Amino acid sequence: MIYDVIVVGGGIAGLMAAIEAKDENNKVALISKGNVFKSNSSMASGGINAVLDTKNIAEIDKHIQDTFNSAKGLGNKKAITYMCKQASSIIEKLVEYGVDFDRDENNKILQRPFGGGSSNRTCYVGDKTGSAITLNLIKKAKSKGITFLPNNFILNLAKYQNRVSGVVSLNKENSQIMIYSSKAVVLAGGGYAGIYRGYSTNAPDYTGDLLAVALRAGLCLKDMEFVQFHPTGFVKTNYLVTEAARGEGGYLINSDGNRFINELETRDKVARAILKEELEGKKVFIDLRHLGLEKIQQKLPSLYNAALMQSGIDLSQELLEIKPVAHYTMGGVDVNMTESDLKGLYICGEMASNGVHGANRLGGNSLLEGCVFGELAGKQAKDYSKEFEYAPIDYNTVIKDIEMIDFIFSGDSTKNFNAIRISLGKCLFEKAGIVKDEKSLTLAFDYIKYLRQISYTLHCINKEKNNNVELTAILELRNALEIAEAIILSAQKRHESRGAHYREDYPKTSKKYDKSFVVKELKKGFFKISFKENEILKRIKNIFINKE
Image (cartoon, rainbow, N blue to C red; front, top):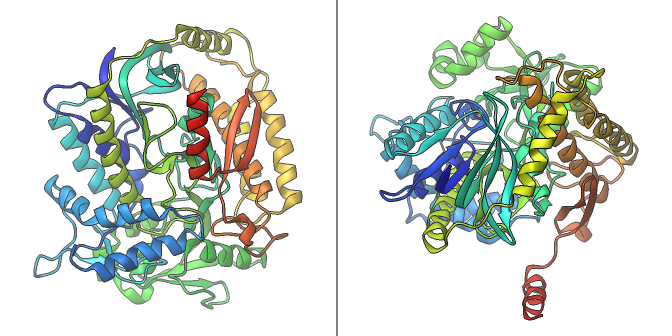
């Protein structure tokens, strides 16, 4: 199947990219691993940051500064400035697409406070902002004639020399290998917090698959040690207690009945404070009782219903026990805004590391980043596809993928791969999570290496080719273990604490580490990790290489 532009990922970044890439004369496909209605974007409930008045330069500058401050020295000022200045036009576009933001009696869009922000700039649709945006983007994409290709698991990029030529995919319905040829490709596959299985707001299938694909294609991953733990998840189900709950005035109290942290501090500080209470044997609760039933049902209806249905708790009368959970990943594929080192390949959303979030994401910026850079990636992919023709497909890569799938179906397994995924999540949370040190990271690295060896001996017990969930689970596990190793290696290298990365043996921030680490796979199973090269020196080096 041949398209002008292929977009991989059904979240907000992918949908925005597909919409921008499509015109009356080209063919655009949007590929998703599962149902397009299921994404982390659709679960994002708090809101989207924007200074709505484009003439209010002072407030825009404050948004830029808040974002840069949250990045803790690793932010890219160019990318941050671009995002914050585009925010108002993005909100206008979303309204045009049908997103019905909450408004006051004068029909002005309401904005709430969010953690780390110095102003009230977070636009919202109750506590279901992500869902409202996603649904309207899907409608817009369908109206533009974009082809949706759900239930496709991307195995590898197809490339020719230094150009992308398409994607190699596993059709989950029949386990057949598919080749989708394209002039340009946009990857928007989300983050990797799902590998913290049992300790994450993400679905278990958010395992960083496309980051592993990028590694295999020779691209670098950057800032992988920076995993953001949301302070407030349901203790039993990991369901996210939106930051809007604290933005609307909710308290955090321990089992002694004491408030112990400023609820609107940045997420890393709040998460560590909660973990400290838990390690001291105390439970932690969110208290919304003082808000009253009417306000809770008006401002936080989804949370109220979830607490009632999942925990049997009436938030207007009772406390809800919470815990920190892996929520968002700042690390991703190293890109310049959205451009990768592979021509015709653009990367956006949570899987891209463009320097907007640096060491710690500012609350309310994730939906904004997805929209802004999804829009940009779509425009760039469309322009590229008009300028260049299709590149050849290297079928040697395809044959290797076919052989890999045949191998997984061929033998019998003695290991329980679901148990391995659960133990991986537990290991990462306890040894490479909110708090870590050299000893815990070494133990985590050794265990992940052991699990990686096991993962290549796994086979499907069920040999049925149609909708084989075991096959997908094994492939996800392999990718998750690759990404887990990149996280741990990066955390080991960073001998300091910064943003979402906290080491008990190096509790202070060091000027020496005012740089990002990049991870490159030299050959299968062997990573090289180093400081990111200075961009100016890199360009000079490339000039000399090209001359040779």
